[in-house]
Length: 392
Image (cartoon, rainbow, N blue to C red; front, top):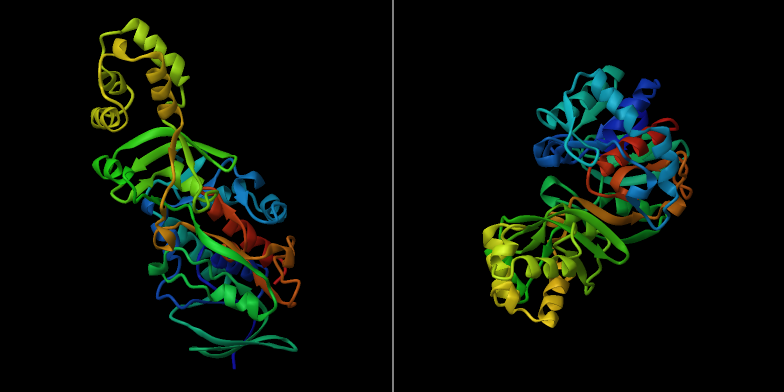
């Protein structure tokens, strides 16, 4: 029966980071995963370019029922530490915007870097390996797997959340947590597009593929990013960001003119260009198609001089505070992350070790820590994996 120091379940970002770091400390490390290839989510992230961290990472970029939990790990393994690893490995990268760092070439550059470090440090990787049973024993944990029986002193759960099941996501990590006495906080899809089923869907369908800068707010949170119309509803970075704060039934407040005081601007345009049509005016801010459709859907397009003060005020309100109640979200099928998960109040923020079952560790997305869009979730994977690796 193989006996090792550390078994890590999950060959994603957090699991590989933990493996290479722990093995470099001289620990005997085995990584097992039921998927056929490691790092599938790494490979598809950032449109295949992997948005591997964010230069402006700080605790405020993360959601958790226990907001202080992430601070320790993020402080001990920062974005600059990961950037240094990437630079040392010779992986070319660039900042896209808002501190988001992407590979110049492809996401596999990051995965290959992690796998090479694992190989060099002596961590072994076993794909196509399922776990049937886990038992607590005097010396640690005994696992019944398709590889056979494994024993380890430290068991690390790095199996991720429920997002994108086509890549192999399951609730396995949550089940292990519950088996060993952990509380599971309600899970739901995060960083996910919205679906629209009411009359607005016609507009979304007609504008599918159109992107526009906006300021979206919901439940006291606001994000300035692009909105993308789709055949099914609303997507784009702004919608993905706010989706993590939205609950069913909530109203999204969308400002389509974030750089203007809409009412003052319209009054000024009316005074300066009384004969211009509304759709012509909007066409200078949005695509021609979007301007025409908004003018048709919301208002009757006519020369600006023909709008009364009340109509102008109503028009400004629609542009500055377009209120949308989504039917729902696309769910885990396209969600980038899972909100909720293992309650971090039952896990050490210093070591990532279970406070319920010694020698059991949780890292990455399985925990109730979710980053904003833009490389923050990868930084949490690197930081939590590194933190646990110091103690396994």
